[in-house]
Length: 232
Image (tube, rainbow, N blue to C red; front, side, top):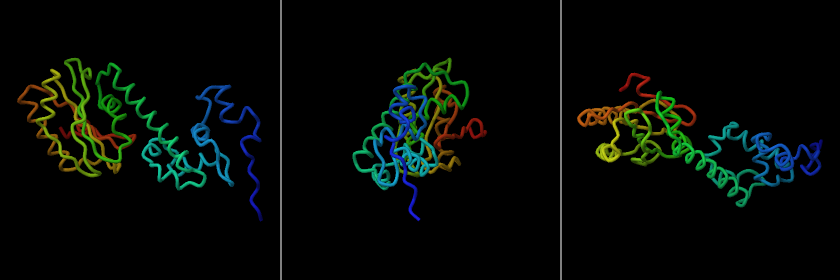
């Protein structure tokens, strides 16, 4: 038995077509699949653009965070997605990530909880395929003075120079530090190296009368706080 023929988007009612729907009702009215379909422009000989977009999102568990981690070659595995479409999607995702990071970095952020710290650093870390260590430098009122990337490494390990963290802190006249890094594996469990680094940094901070408030591990849309876990 042959498969039922799928209607092309041009055969849909005009108010249901993604482009027309966006013009008429604005982008908030569209689903993630409809927005992705606009970027795709067209589907393949078996699927229209919306159905193709739905299949792509399903492959990433309907998580935009997971989609952010994809690559051009991964997208090209989907029938109907060539280099041009994959590049368009990747460029759009990267713009979204940069807009989010810029918005967070320019806001007057005050840290009152581990969740605040996570929100402040997440745009820089949650979608990375490799490890990075960052610091949030705080004022006496726990305002974020500066953010700095301290080190970048591979999937599982990164060398962090405690002296560099202290140097950045002193130059910014910071009185507090929050250490942050990501686990690309998604596993929130602190490694022994994570614990050793935290202790070394805490001891060094005490000599300079700087407080290490927390160490945040980011794993996608979740995080672990050393302070919450009693690990400081």
